[in-house]
Image (cartoon, rainbow, N blue to C red):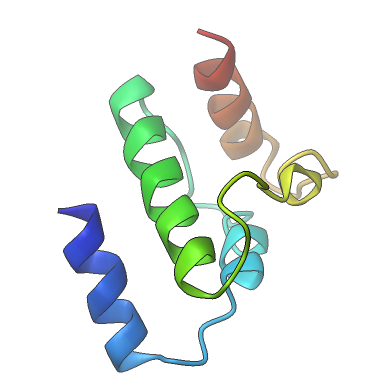
Length: 83
């Protein structure tokens, strides 16, 4: 359950910076295998950002649309967004 996961993270790491979490997706092991994985990822990120006080109608897409080191991971993300 995404809600429980985010709440647990909030309790264990109350100062977690969710924008930094998005930036850290750019690592060699990151890949979005399918639309279900994309949906789960975005649900967690939206809930996390919301719990940190970010408006629910704003998502920092500039963190996803910048130049990544892990191009394969970024392309898997973008490909699943466009499906």
